[in-house]
Image (cartoon, protein in one colour):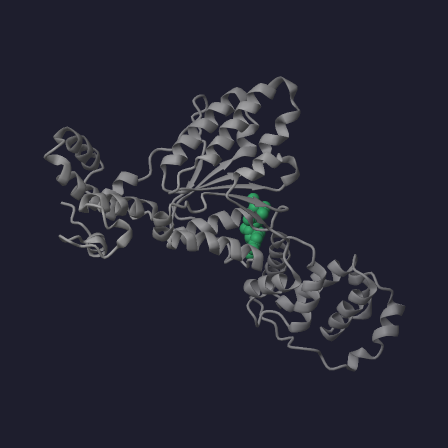
Amino acid sequence: MLRPSCHVWSTRATSPGDDEDSSVGQMSDFERDVVHLVRLSLGGKVDDVAALARRLLRVIADRRPDLAEAAQTILRTASASPARALEPQPLPVDLDSRLELLRREPTPHLPIEPIWPPAVRKELEAVLHERERIDRLVDAGIAPTRSLLFVGPPGVGKTLAARWLAVQLRRPLLTLDLAAVMSSFLGRTGNNIRVVLDFARRAPAVLLLDEFDAIAKRRDDATEVGELKRLVTVLLQAVDDWPEAGVLIAATNHPELLDPAVWRRFDRIVDFPPPSVQGIRDLVVRLVGDKGISKPNLDILAALLHGRSFDNVVRVVTSAKRAAIVRQVQFSETIAEVLGELAQSADLEVKLRVASELTTAGRSQREISALTGLSRDTIRKHLGGSKTRRPVGNHKEAQE
Ligand SMILES: Nc1ncnc2c1ncn2[C@@H]1O[C@H](COP(=O)(O)OP(=O)(O)O)[C@@H](O)[C@H]1O
Ligand SMILES: [Mg+2]
């Protein structure tokens, strides 16, 4: 038997003459509970919602036994635990292939604890704060952010951010990869997308429409223009009236393909820039630990990787870690090689910094020349006698 949780009753317990909240001063206990029910459901407090709903049903049972019975049945069929009412429903499938149309991650996994550029962090945290203070927004009659558009080049954390938000909000993540859906026969695509949106609208989840521009990309095919237009309308309608309890995120690498009218529909647009030099440094340290790489190497690496995506930085560092393990050498050695390779396309000043690091790491001038593309003459001229130089920084890098 369901017992109302303390939370429900302690925050809104009503007693005759209880008028501590002036904005609801004229309300009956029942009306007050209805307002509270709204507040709880938007906050995603499933157990409390069910407990309060039962209490309200008892109140109306005398006057409207039919209504009360119908609602009780809903709560009962949700079985003994109210949380079960929201237990995963089977995912919608394509009618022909029977393949699932959505990917569901009940507790999304973060491949790495993200490093957010300050502007991105500000936007994402604002969304979280709104949900934490949902009762204030409800009281003021203002909806929280329901729809977000994530914009930026590939590999800068758009998908990661959707995952991160779902983790922070303790909600499952539903992902619809529009690029994949759009590649199938369009007539069915439209229906599939409708089914998916319908399903996601009712789920207490974060919905990610990934590769959102895939829809726009199909625009050039004249034979499908009509169906595509309908599809875009369906999607935009969904963005417009997405329920307040839900969060819909669309992500795109090609914002230029989206109509300005599309942009306007979203509550919030978040621009994802490539990492700054500091962002790259933070990411490398997160990947190898702060004793994992010497400061000079970290500086050079960050300078060489500036302009690349977070994804690219992860790949470069991970492959050096992998090589160190396989070859049973220090990470400092494989990362020095990576620096040399990256330096091939860098300017002279950066090349010389790398050459200096390789020298202190004990590499011969021939090796350095091969790695950086600098002539041995240039190396000798600029770093001549450097064999006797004291090594810069800490070269006892962890092998990891
Ligand atoms: N802000 C970030 N912090 C740490 N790693 C990141 C970040 N952004 C991206 N990455 C790395 O790049 C990979 C791909 O990122 P993803 O979110 O899929 O990029 P996008 O969706 O923008 O193309 C992630 O799995 C992660 O390893
Ligand atoms: Mg992505």
